[in-house]
Picture (cartoon, helix red, strand yellow):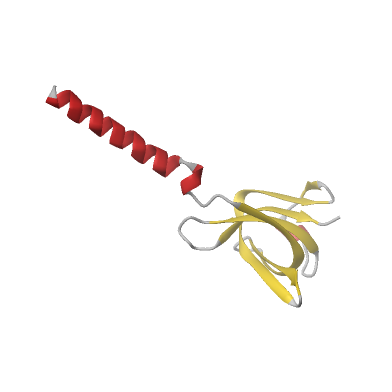
Length: 112
């Protein structure tokens, strides 16, 4: 009886750890969507910097790499990063990485 109780406790603990690790509530998966202007593009590292006006002269800067499967569109069609220009108005969707290394951009859409 003691052995089965230990096994049950171990299985319960293992399931609890899996729930805590895998559950979205315990990961940083919140995504933000903002519209601003491109201020820098690094084609070699597939990164982009977008300044987003926040009112009263405040600017929020989104700077990070494009995710490997990022949605990149211009005029409603798939596009490459080299189709974008400094000063162009875009909508950017991003989320923070779990390790605190900054944001990753999952969508870059030219504003219409």
